[in-house]
Image (cartoon, rainbow over all chains, first blue to last red; front, side, top):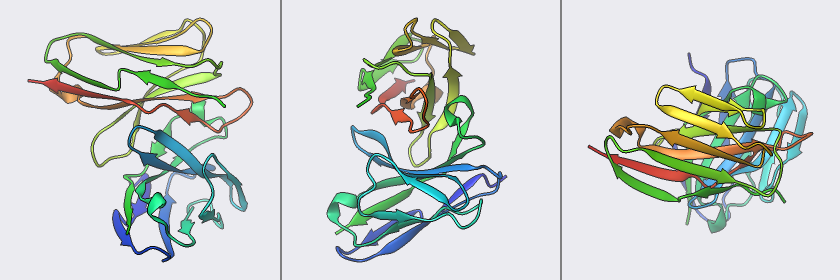
Length: 115
Length: 111
């Protein structure tokens, strides 16, 4: 019963470095998304995907790229890390497009610090 | 821009007390969800409400969706230390799936 698995759990980057946050789900969900969570600001949508090969921007996409080559995996790439990207990142998946009417499953999060 | 405002931001109460937290917006939502998040974990869905005026109960938790589908409340009866966590509301806009999250209410229940 893995659900949504995110790696790594913690990461420290230097300004300008790039990295990829991994997200995998084993529930055959079509809809996957990435959020960042900052104190006092709730969860903000970065990018989302409605199926393999289809991605779109959310509320705060700048500085991030995504791809969806398989149903299971939805990696998030930081192109050139900045201190403003220090945050906790969550990946989520749900069964259908209308995910607000079905349960969304979240990973445990990746705590990223950019120095 | 749709916004969800949650109040209070922080609540510290004694075990056995009742409490209500609120989620308000000026926008209409097609549905609204409540999640609970514990430290170091991702949010976990508690309930989804989709009909204006709808009331759902989950043991000691009562959720209500406003008649105009712009607001919601979560009432906890006889709070327990296990209820401690961050409570988030999330609204689904009409015609889309870019869900909006509130900033959350952080609840601490003291034994």
